[in-house]
Image: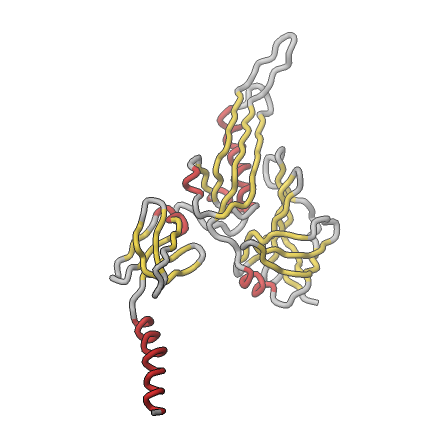
Length: 286
C-alpha cells in the first residue's frame, strides 16, 4: 500500500515537472533579460508569447527585443532594438537617436522632458550651425538623463532678421522640445554590488548643462564627497539617497551603472546635473 502511494506521488508531481523541463522553448533576448517561452506570433509592432503550461498570451514590443532563438534552432534578429545604442556616460551623447514617430517609443521607458534653445551670436550667424548646436544640446541633455532616444515634440527655427532705423536686428534661433526614453535601466542589484558596504563615495566628475549653455560645464574643481544613506528602487528606477557639502539635493536617480563607474542625475528649474563615481578606485569606505 505504501509503495502504491509513493508511486502515485511520483507520477503526479515529479513526472509532469520532468516532462515540462524537457520540452524545448523559444528564447527571447530582450533589453531586460532572457525570456523562455513559446512564441505565438511576430507582429509588426509586438511579439506574442506564452509561458510553459499557460494559455495566457503576453505581448512585448519589438523595439525591446534583440533576437529570438526558436526551438527549431533558427535565429531571428530585430533591427528595431539594434537602432538604439548603449550609452556608457554623457560623453556618448552623439549615440542618442532622435525620432518624430511616436510608435518608435512603444515599450521604452520614459525618463523626462527636455527643452533646448540655441541662438546665433550675430545677425550674420549661420542658420544650419545654430540648428546643429540646438540638436547637440538636446542629445547631451538626453544622455545626462540616461536616455538613448528623444521623441521630438516641437521644432521652431527663425532666421536672421536685419535691423532697421527703428528696430534692432535679431540673430537666428532654434528651439527644440522632446521626451527622453531609454530601453534599459540600471538594476538595483548591480548598483548595490558596485557600492557594496561603502558609506562614502568620492566623485570624480561634476558637470551640468542649462538651457543657455553651449556645452557641458564643469560645476566645481573640488569634487564633493557623498555620505550614502540608502539605495532603493521605485517603479523600476534606482535611487541613491546621500548628502554632500554644498549640494541641496539629497535624492539622486542612478543613470549609469557598470563595472567602471556609477552615474547619478538630478535637475532643478534651470539645469541638469551629473556626477560620476569610480566604482573601484574612487569609492571610499568608513
